Length: 359
Image 1 (tube, rainbow, N blue to C red):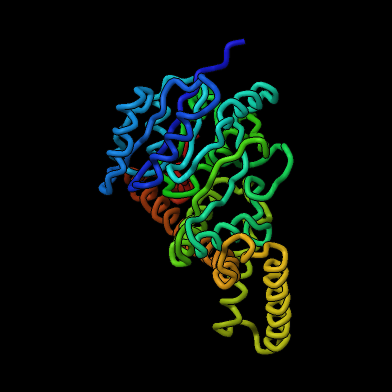
Image 2 (cartoon, one colour):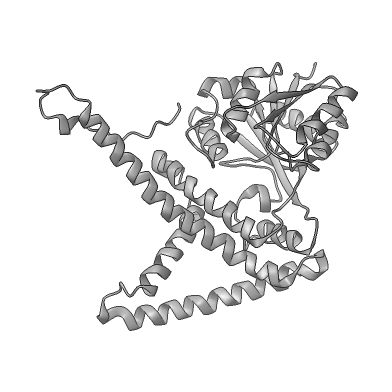
């Protein structure tokens, strides 16, 4: 049976030094199913586009496509619209696929009947700090996502560096461009809601380049958390326990720090917080013992700092995002009321707290 045609879609914005190896990884695939590699550029100013154009001069399957809307979700939708392949492979410009990535993905799609498949990330830094950050992200102490920790094929709620059937994405209306982050999880949610399966398989492997500083890591996870709150507000049934633990911990810390606990229970709350702090410190120690940062060329100090930063930034982002989501819904409700014709019966009863979600 002839393999379906594949379009590779690479969103890009200022990825000099990274996008070239990413494209090279797809040009070196062991399958001939790839008909095009679309690099969707959001207006790079660092010479990234020159790296793409150089590779186009070597292989006409490489195309540079402009993304005037600049957002990642817009890049994905432009890729869907521009592509000619029956299967779409999305990958970060920081990623580098294994040589058999696309061929293996096509085989798993065929075997499982899934609408999308994804694999594991190999977190590869460029120095001791980024190695430490990558090790923290890949550790079960850092993130509980299957694509970072699972060792066996399984159905999952989300996949990264995904390979999708194009028809499934078209059916749900593509990516939601009202989301600045977490648009991938929300798309995966709507695919599952439409009856599709998402399959993780460890046979698929691609390199992920971690951030190079703790500050960049904190901003990354704050943004992830902020927009995760919006997705949770739109789709409450998509919430998993792993999504709630960090914001609950941050909220508890805030309550204790500002003295919001009643005086009668304050001492008990403080003792409980101290016990949790000791347990968390023990968890960090266990993480160091398990992961052995120095053996991976990683800074132990930065590894220990990265774990609570991931949890705290993500949890704080979720809380801030929840406030932002509530404000947006209040503004939508006020606008709905203001739009009612004069004399309408009981306009308040017609207020709906809408989200503007696609699909």
